Image (spheres, rainbow, N blue to C red):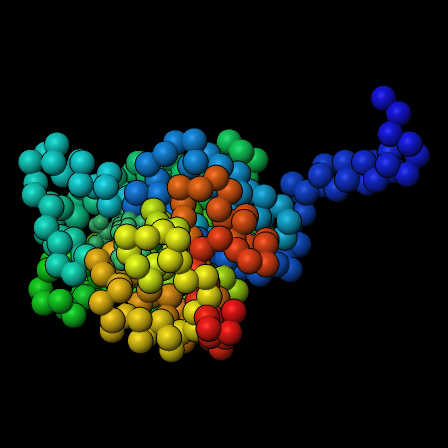
Length: 298
Ligand SMILES: Nc1ncnc2c1ncn2[C@@H]1O[C@H](COP(=O)(O)OP(=O)(O)O)[C@@H](O)[C@H]1O
Ligand SMILES: CC(=O)N[C@@H](CCC(=O)OP(=O)(O)O)C(=O)O
């Protein structure tokens, strides 16, 4: 087939670039923290597309950091071993036995699955738990009373994470943290990802979930708020529009923005390539939370 001279030149240039991409290790890009979990994990085909999107982001010079959840898988495993699942304000009541199962599922199973899937699609992922290199340091979260080994992240090993990013790897983090008291703590994956985004001063914090974004009317997916500032988000949190799992999600976005993250995004993890559509298109497809602009202006 004859493409004509100029076109062939362009193809050649593109080929050279594509071949060079895996060798680009120069650290220049912005950090994007991606929280992937919950029901957005259930479709295997979409899971593969999300992993490909993450690899593509790395290739084009961004630095994705993946923090995963796995609540539904933990529930299934607890059921198998006859342990009841109980939640207080969306947080799992975690006794010592439950903590063991949470760690087995998150660190032993889901973390390794995501890591190998990214690697299968051309990435260089490193699976980590909060215990590796003291990555996530937590203390007991008592804001909801005593609900066992539920932790709140107080610090992360930023130098270690930066070293991983600078060397071209994609960190995949399970939200099981280590306490200064030596205990293992179960941390909600949204909150863990938000804290990691804040400490890394990420440009973007993206949460993949199972709705199209923050909805004005929960029962109408067309009522999506595409852009909102964090003050308005706070007001929305006090209204009856936001309930259940969206409360901690929106709260950790607001906190991340307050702590210096440029934008937070709640997007639909059920849609193919939602990550790429949100990050690389002007309009995006989900809800973007920013410091300044108001959604009335947009
Ligand atoms: N105003 C709202 N807009 C969108 N989702 C909402 C809203 N209020 C409550 N929700 C609920 O929040 C859920 C997302 O939170 P959650 O179930 O914790 O997600 P994940 O499992 O992905 O972490 C949605 O499935 C939806 O049922
Ligand atoms: C304290 C707490 O509730 N921890 C969560 C950690 C996993 C998680 O957050 O997973 P999703 O994002 O899939 O919900 C749990 O045990 O389910």
